[in-house]
Image (tube, rainbow, N blue to C red; front, side, top):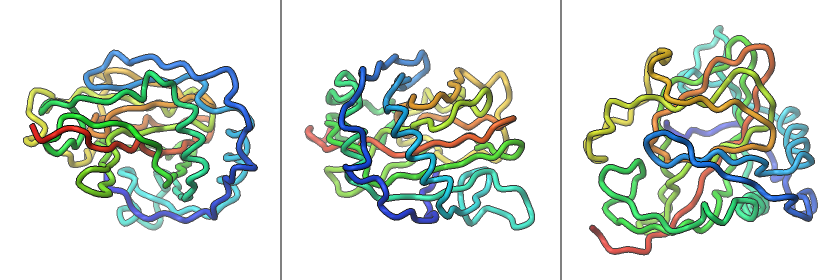
Length: 251
């Protein structure tokens, strides 16, 4: 999915606003889907969740279409979601410190993995992206079609390779769903990463994760996923990335 500009939020999340302690510690469980994906329980503390909710819900945001793209929103229709963004190195540093150490090991990628490793097999995670996108889904219209995330490439040797989604609401719907991908047998270079133009069928859903405040998902950018329709209660998430630096030679 393309990254587009959204309504900016001032850098609200300073070190003074962040919890001084990490709390009891997050717990990560690898999900049984093709590719590398983790469900992280209790990544951030309740006070930070509530602080972000207050600021984001009172900040300006822009409507986007079902593919998450601003230019594809059609005036006169219900937005699929509302988006705003904030740049905060302090929040990025805090999120990085909260991630379980087991998730911060170097990665060795092959041509069949789901990350833009650019022919270099070894990459080392070094931090969380300081650009944070806040996404709000309203009941009845909020959803996100099947898509692949994309990297932010800072340089040949530094880029984002994993998506980090932090839930800021409790919901009984609006699950993040990993979808069956017919392109899995193909090498990475032969795959088409275009967004879907339709909603997923039930038999295409491999696994669904229900939003719970403070929990998070960490997964390779190029894993096919969507956001199920939101019913009953507004859904709010923080979307950012894990930054990697190249450590290996070209394969």
